[in-house]
Structure formats: C-alpha cells, structure tokens
Length: 134
Image (cartoon, rainbow, N blue to C red; front, side, top):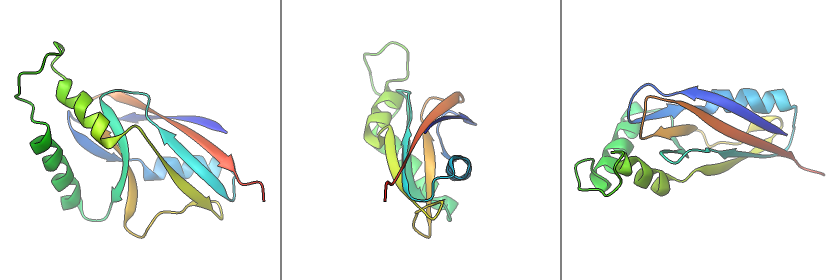
C-alpha cells in the first residue's frame, strides 16, 4: 500500500519529527505485521532514525553536519544550495521500520526525522507498507 505524506519544514536546516505521521499511516493501512518503507523524493533533504527524547541530540547532529559540510565553501553549483545536496547524500533518502502488531517497531528512544537542509519548504514522504504473508 502506497501513501504520500506532506511535511512543512520550519526553517533552512531542521530535523522534523515525522514519527506520529508515519504511525498514523501505518494505523490507516491496518497492516498488523510487515515493513514500512519511507522514501524522500527530494535532493536537498533526507530521512533518518535517531533519538527523539533529548532535543540536544538534534542540535548536535545538525551542528555536526554543518562542520562536515560548511555553507561558506566555494561550491560550483550556482543555486547556492550545494551543501544541502551533499548533506542529503550523507543522510540518505530512504529507511525502513518493521511493523509488529500494527505499530512501528522502534527502539525506546527512537524517532523518524525528515532532515531538512534547504528549507523552509513543503516536502513529501512516500510510504510503502508491505504486509507479511505469514
């Protein structure tokens, strides 16, 4: 079952917790056991799973990306968003989570985040939920 979720990102660089939106989609699918694939069809953002309890972890992650790929280097791409494209390749544009008993099977402190590197924008998440056969 294929779904599309829209997400509004609040600023140029942000990690937006999309766990609840994806959980709602899993619930809507009525799949008890399976896999939830999450894909971002954009080139300047990504998707990741990390801690969603302590907000300082998010700040640390974003600061690390900025140190690895600083904004002020002489990039060849003329649109000015080369760092966003590079960060997106580091994060990746897809992930998956198991579904067990109708719920995402995440660790205690885990959440799913849209990693925005060129916002604010409206983004899409493509979700494909595949039910186990047994």
